[in-house]
Image (cartoon, rainbow, N blue to C red; front, side, top):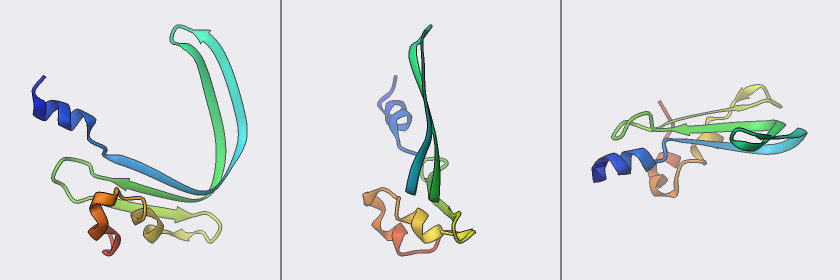
Length: 93
């Protein structure tokens, strides 16, 4: 595998951020073909999603606040990697 391919394969492209999270269900099962499995169900107040679809493309950030039932895009941009400080000060397109 070429070095560029390895870098692209390990590049972070999707990040989730949650605020005020409650676990509502926790299940363990196993051992299966791949070993034991764990399933966690939760509810949350805010969700932020940060994504860079392709290398070199503009990052996309979006968020939602279930309590206020409104967009929370500022919350979403706060989950961008620290190397993208400038993204935090601009509104996503």
